[in-house]
Length: 408
Image (cartoon, one colour):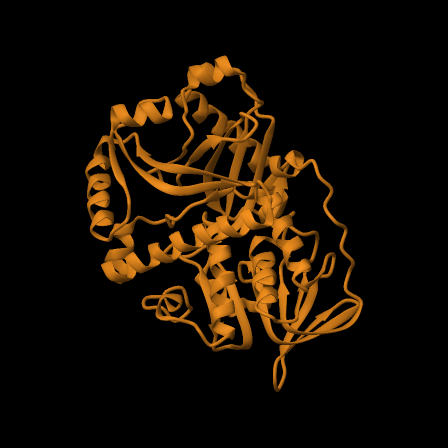
């Protein structure tokens, strides 16, 4: 498996606690649900399945939360990576509305779950989707009309209003309430802790070498042991080498993030960015917000997967470009160097939606893959949907994210 992250993650450095050191799997284990992957998705699935009464074993190849989760943009957003209008064109307005409703419900459910776990890792704030391209303003206004028809709370902003929120000039935007920022590493550890408290058994440094269906379930083979289970949940984020027939559904991408040093109050006032998460209409898009300790976190410049040997050099170039673009937005940052720069590997799909559920080629497998830039929201949604599927409660909205959805 390739490295899921390169560079120094702000989220790992910002964590002041002590992560539990979990054992490696040795010998034979038996479970109802075996989960492969210890990021947010896998740990959320472990928690929800265990709370539902299942015997759960989770195996993580490295350490809990230190892969793609630690490279996360940390945005808990109801908006998929594609506009409502684009989803409506592809699947119809009704399906697009249900997709958004499912995403919005997942945001709320994850916020409530983390609040009960007592992480302090979540901060609610609106998102502002803006454009600096005059030609895109009309499309943004039409997007607001479509969202409102579907009952989605959105407010159209003119250039002056965008500047009041962002501190820089733009031609227009959409303000959407009900989103949040999340410390992904703290959140993942909290989910893992909750899963263990509910009875799940978690293992680190336990890479799976093979998953094979059996007559009544699956067997996971590891270097020093095995897990026999009724179901295997594949929460690796993308289709690994073991699932080559699925690879064509995903485009592997690298995404890049920088974080400035802590900025004093006077510098923050000059910048003028409010308590809001920003993302733009560029493709690939950029996103921007404050961290809890007053850094600017700026990311984007996604590109097709970079060969392993060139990833560090590509990160340096992309970090320089991101800082240059950040200075263009806020000239007062001229000369500021980033304290952090990192990149992550992720999978995106043609329609911006994940694949969640079963696949006919792989009996007794449950997949949660392809989140694009919305991994926190879709990861938790996947955990909820897979529990419903195993319990026989899957509904029509769950099928909107399945491998057999129309046009997939």
